[in-house]
Image (cartoon, helix red, strand yellow):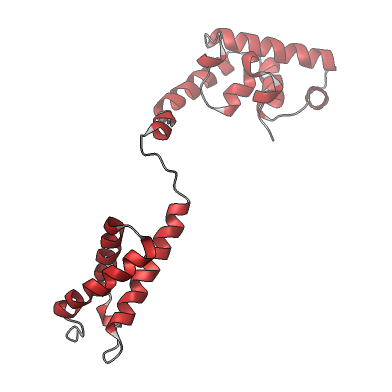
Length: 189
């Protein structure tokens, strides 16, 4: 590897001009210092790309300008949350609970009669209409509605579900239970 074409002294000498340029871009002294530091770090890391005999200051200004506009594009997608109020409203449900809920649901589902389980899965999980499910199962519409209703009621009892707050976040579970049978909570295909 060849010797570096830029010395640390040359970079240090460019700092006042870089700082003035950064201030003209952002108008904030602390942010300008951060930009200068970032530009110098990038220049040092990529000094092998600098062509000896060309204008070092122009090269450093270009690096600083690119860093400023890249950071600006990134910040446009960020949400200002100085007091943390937005972050405090964000929650993530732990994955292990939903895994356990799904296991409980599968066990309870297997306790249903085969015709109720089939009806519930066709209407609740697959999102078929009662009419479509009745054709598939070879029964009349009223029988299909009755099977789904009884399956949901039995499943809710087996899982000890009394309110919507007792439900997990799994959309299949939500669609299968009577509390979730309102159209707003059904699984969309």
